[in-house]
Length: 165
Image 1 (tube, rainbow, N blue to C red):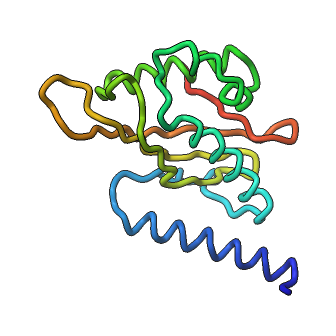
Image 2 (cartoon, rainbow, N blue to C red):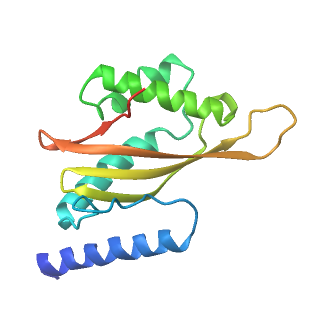
């Protein structure tokens, strides 16, 4: 049986390995701001709590149509926002992004968290890749959308914070 310190070290190594493998994949990446605000190391419990919370949210988006009331009224999606107004802002922005990227039926078929960075122990940015069928006529294949979302930890939980519309 391993000690808590060994487990925390293992998680830290896992996070570094994941980050290294993500960077090896190429493509656009989150930028680390220069100066006093940059990517910071956080303890394993903080990283795991954030990863689990974000994973629940983004996995819930798979195979969901964003132009239906069923998805809009999903209580699991809404519980990731501190208020209904913040949910409305995020939902409208994501639905518009999916439409502009020509997702068939505004439905992502795959959602992959590519990277996340902690700016502080209470703020994280995450890069997510959405993949779906191309909804344009006579255009077989897939389309992709990369989003960058911001999360904050307040009141003991992680909350998605939409950008300004």
